[in-house]
Amino acid sequence: MDQQDPKRGRLMQAPENFLSTEGRSRRRALGGLLAGGAALLAAGSVGAAEQAAAAMDPKHLPPNLPPWSQNLGKPVGANPYGVPSSFEKNIIRRSSPGLTTTTQSSVAFAPLQNLFGIITPNGLHFERDHNGRPDINPYEHRLMIHGLVREPKIYTMEDLLRFPSVSRIHFVECGANSAMEWANPSVPTVQYTHGMLSCAEWTGVPLSTLLEDAGFDTKQAKYILAEGADAAGLTRTIPISFALDDVLVAYGQNGEMLRPENGYPVRLIVPGVQGVSNVKWLRRIKVGDKPWNTREESLQYSDAMPDGSIRQYTWIQEAKSVITSPSGGQHLLDKGGYYEISGLAWSGRGQIKRVDVSTDGGKNWRTARLQTPVLNKALTRFRMDWHWDGSPALLQSRCIDSTGYVQPKMRQLREVRGTSSIYHNNAIQTWLVDAEGKVHNVEA
Image (cartoon, rainbow, N blue to C red; front, side, top):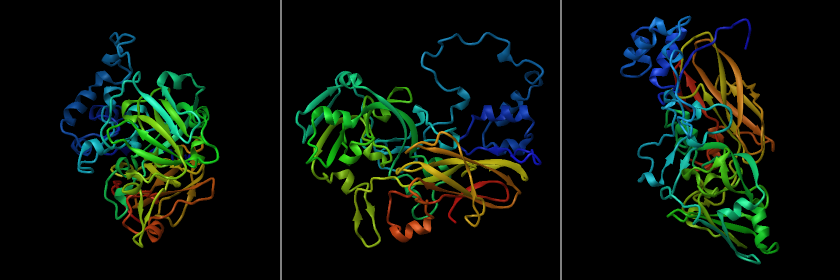
């Protein structure tokens, strides 16, 4: 931050709410940031006036002690499994109404605008199901490995837990992330433009260990078929080279067992590959010598090209980035204030090497700071200082990965892919900050 301009700009979060109405009103009162009816209307909440009035009670403000500092608190263990504060109740996964014909085959988007660092909490990890979420008894669940193997195997969860485990941090991104932006900007906030994305520490057994245990045919094996235990029986082809590299049969997520919506009791983690290949509720792996061309890789998760052809097996999620703050739906309140531009970058081919940020729609770029750790096939947090002078601005980020690949503009992507695609949109995202400080999703 420039020491000659210490004024820090205030940022009002998007309608999803960074804090609940009560929390936001109290915070403004304590800091003396906003007052009066106009500010309360800006909060976008009914009943904010009464809540703010209570929060501004002088007896709650320093140097006085508020009520919560004068009474005995809740006992240790009051919540045997910890839950977020009630003031954080609006930070949740959200679905887009009408996105799919049934909720069982829909998506719940992660609130990227409200997250810090690179790890997504288990309760906020995006959710994509194809036939609803099964509730599986881990004692009755089995994982089969068969096909081109010397000895077909059936593993219990207890068997899997006996193998030496590893833990790695990787992102998972749905191949349809940003799909609604192919033709034109269509959703207001980063939760909906990019929220089919999360990052976690995964713990499990390397798939290579299990394949070796079953004695896979090293000469004939070219692919594996992974199948889930949900009613959709979702199946995906994965090259054997991936399976022998960094693929995990994972049962742990951020230090605890997987949540049911994220694959409990066991799932596949295929780092850098589109989310559907990270098969949840994993029940079967078949080793074969050719792709299977299943429904989810023929009718779905394939790319419609301009010449009418269909491109299959676009496994890798190419380098991509997005500014999460300021982002759509948020509101910059102070002209002439300092703001920190922050966002996320990731690549399915390796590490992020650089992120550039533009405030004028790509005419000029500045290199952002990369927050450590910078990991392989994981989210990377970037940050850049910015002084907003009150004039309209077009915010963009552009990442470069360890292979030298540069994230493309939307125009460049359409020149190759046309406009009939759904999947694998990794184009540069643009946010317009208007003269009033309101942030909009636009294309530039």
